[in-house]
Length: 275
Image 1 (tube, rainbow, N blue to C red):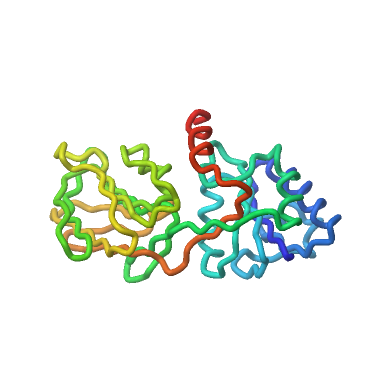
Image 2: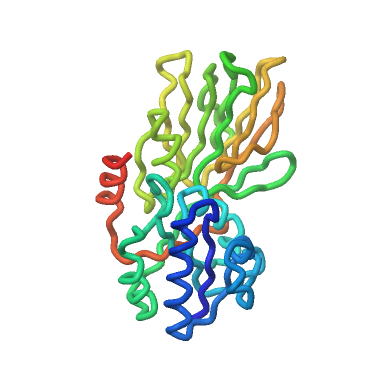
């Protein structure tokens, strides 16, 4: 088994945990790839240096919060490399392991006592290029106190025309993120669906909608002079203008996560209580 290591590098406790994990894996004679960002902070492991884009590991251990995981999946999902996520963030809905349980879980990992869970992703046609997101696309105004005028289609059928502060199109994984805060449902990751959630809509009947995962979603911008910012998994991508269109469809490349037990609902309830 070859294992990659990716971590946030802005916290000393995360880097300390990286050191302990790396030493454990070296003691167990595991072949390693360590992300170059870590090596800048921990140069003693430079012989294992590898840019995340070039990793060929069987599994990559990611230590951080949801943002770190989303960034790692951007590079790893197309190579079908599963991620074992260790929570070094605040809540960490996408994470599997708490820091105090790391070595128990590493023992299970090296004993192949785990399973791989697939998570649906969305491809977003943005600025002429397809970009893959694990959590969501968020559309919001580029000016405070302004509203967007949007026309929403699912499989070329008009679903709604809305005025709202913004719009979220979420995967089941993203249903526990911004979508949930905006009033969207929590969706079991086994459900093959996307969620469309208006943000503070003007019409009270503009409610969240769950649509089949294989649907094509199109959003058109209707109001001249009203610009929208597209945010893909927390990264600003493009400013949209009058009559421009954005399109989403299910990705051919699902994300893969290492799991040790099936505990989605218990995990969500625990993290919501912590949050």
